[in-house]
Length: 73
Image (tube, rainbow, N blue to C red; front, side, top):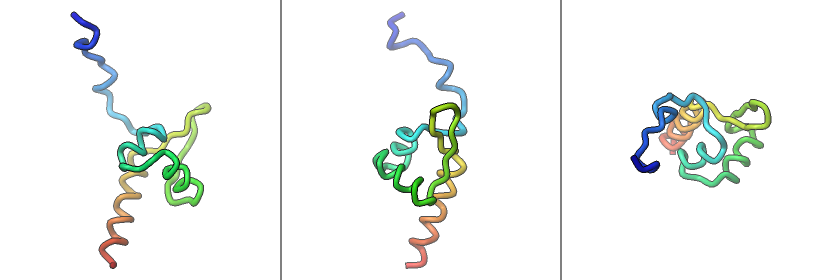
C-alpha cells in the first residue's frame, strides 16, 4: 500500500492542546497574531518542554468571548 494511503492512528487521538501554528490555523489568523494575543493575556498558553501549547478549551473560551463582544455592538 502506498505510504500516502496508510492510516495514521495518531490522527484518531483527540487533541486537547494545539501548537501555536495549529491554533493559528484553527482561528484563521497568523502565528504572529497568536503570539500577540498571548503576550497581551487575551489567549492563555502553557509549555511542555520547549513547546508552547494552547488548550482547545482556551481556544473555545476565546471564541465565546469574542462572539459575546460582537453581540454587544
